[in-house]
Amino acid sequence: MNKVFSNFLIAISFYMGLVASATGHTYFFGVSDLSQNHKTKRLEIVHQFTTHDIENAIAQSKQIHFSAEHKDYNLYIQQYFEEKFSLSYKSVFVPLNWVGFEVTSGKIIAYQESQLESFLPQLVVKNAILTDTYPKQVNTVNFQGIDIQGKAIFGSLTFDYRSKEARITPKSTH
Image (cartoon, rainbow, N blue to C red; front, side, top):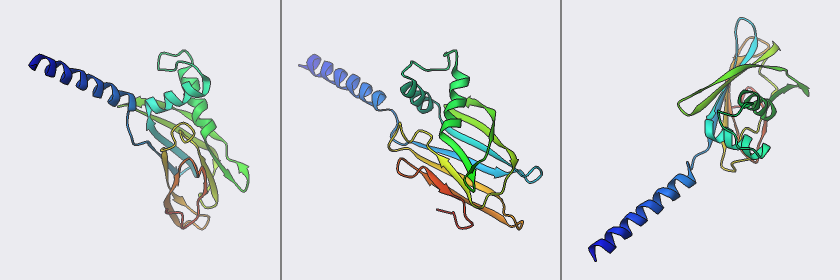
């Protein structure tokens, strides 16, 4: 009887381990920091997201096996961020340069910058990073810079599967 009970416990433990690994994490969030370089007046963007979530989203959208070993890994990461994150001002797209990315401690940290001088107020941010793949995904964009009169402006915007676009206003802290 002890051996049967012991085998039962081992089987249950094994099953629980499989369920835990299959479900992964339960919180899906990403952070992007949008700041204005005070010298160049250009916007600098730093994104931080969970690496395997980005890889899974790319694999799903391209219907491929996708990991760091993929021959087009760097290109697909770049394309994903450029497709899912954009800025516009007065309905005009703000061009962003891809600076690059690094993977550290399970996070992808991606870097972009505006090509032109940009002011924050009335800038429209579109952020759909991972929101189509993970319904529980919540993205925060923190911003800081100056307005046209030279006053400091800062705050944050929140995005999810329902809200993928928001405008920076002096009272955008929500």
